[in-house]
Image 1: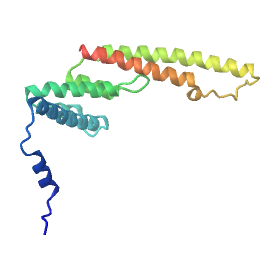
Image 2: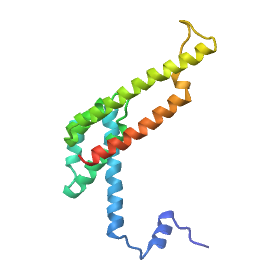
Image 3: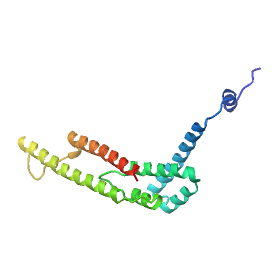
Image 4: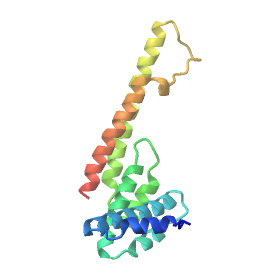
Length: 173
C-alpha cells in the first residue's frame, strides 16, 4: 500500500538542499516588518492604538530593522494623507511616532485644498451656464458636481499630482 504524505512532508522533500540567500532573507524580513507596521498603523488609524503605544512597538526593533520600520510608517502615512480629507491622525503619527515636522505637508494639503475649491467654483459656474443655455435655471436647480466627468478627472489628476509631490517631500525628510 502507498504511503500518504502530509503537505509539509512533500514541501520538505521538494525544498531539501535549497538555501536562502542573504538578499532573500532581508526581503523576507522587510516584508515581515512592513506587515507588522501596517497592522499597527491600521490600529492607530482606527483609534484602537494610540501613537505612544505605536512608538513603543517600533522601539522593539533592533537598529537595522528600525530604519525599515520607520520607512514603512512614512509610506503608510503618505498613502493615507489625502487632499480634501481630514488628515489629523496621520499628522499625529508622523509627529509623535517618527518625529517628522508636518508643517510642510500641511501647507501642501492646504494649497491643494485651495486649488480644489477654486476649480469647484469654476466648474459650478460652467455647469450653471450650460443649464441656463438649455433653459434650466432657478433656485430649485441643484448642481451635481460628482456626476461631471471633468470634475472626476480633475480630482483624480490632482490627487495623483499631490501624491507625487508628497512622496518627493517625504523622501527628503
